[in-house]
Length: 503
Image 1 (tube, rainbow, N blue to C red):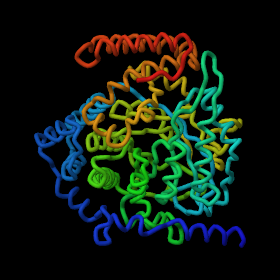
Image 2 (cartoon, helix red, strand yellow; image 1 turned 180 degrees about the vertical axis):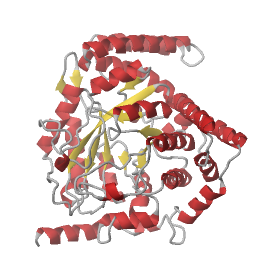
Image 3 (tube, rainbow, N blue to C red; image 1 turned 180 degrees about the horizontal axis):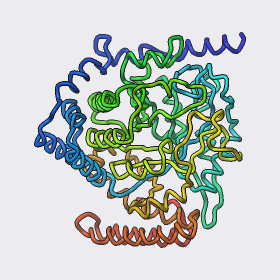
């Protein structure tokens, strides 16, 4: 067989209808486009008192009903929006404290059998430089990320192609975990490998579970059925809406109990997409004993070489609406982590992080092999899209510290079993944030000693003193005295060169 025939044979083997049809209701999926529009149209001009009642429900860390989210999306009064923004920040603080988790994307392959109209990786884009990293190259990329920059978490990214199938993904995850690099005072190591890849079968997901996959992230892109079909042409795997929609069901069935959803805002009406995210979260909660999405992402369409759809869409999301959708997502699914990425400019990230975001990336490069190789970070033919913020991790951490946010490199929860149902209960009661505050202090100390510039270290140390004092003030109401003493003991040991101490 030639290459095209081999690709076609592989494509025909990927989708297993029985693995998603069993979750459907008489052949229908859980996204009813007409119902969503009925909710949006039926909740116009909401009473301010009703909105304030909804905000209190979010503060109690309860997932909203569709009518409640639709009401928020229909608010017109700008003063009421200010109350919504204030509450979204308050909910984030209650669940996650003042932590921001950082990570980096590592693109391993840009070969793809799909032909998504908005994507630089699409099969028919002849301008894209195609490449797949070898396992040794993956390790070299990880060495830069862990040893020079100081990342502890990665999101590894792959196009959908037989060259980057589940076996290749598993091999790259194992390779990344094997990397350990000496630093100024300790060592650099990736402790959490999350995956952004195509929907997979239960069998393939079990393979990834065995090698230590972190969170499994797949974006539906758009929940609107007609738009989905239009931007994902027939004859591709991705054209199958339900195979993608039910991929988190299969992941949870396979034992991958941290799953992440998202939408590419700009493909369709942003209010509809927010509703789709809520319906998806509620569907997972109902089918899997309360386990909802560990994170939700909300990237906006960005320019991409060979993808004219980006310029043609009539659904581009303004900066003001972007702030609104972030706040409504935070309030609708109050326990979830929320990821804003370097697609956005530094100014926009500065504005939206206080609205409820919990994770962001830095020192980001999205070309294949880009961390080891010197190249223009806006070189379009090597990338899926163009970046909005190319600042270093050190620069971002310094700014976050000045804003009062502590950067957390903690991965303890995953290694202590605080995942799935367990973490959902901890998040909904605010207890997870208590663990995380302690671990944020320890991991931030570790990063400052191993990687920070002198300016960032000075600013970071002032923040750490404030954080430790805050923990001390919560004895014994939140933290037992012996836990505080253990924190101080761990802290001193890290200053003396020990690494990876956690609660």
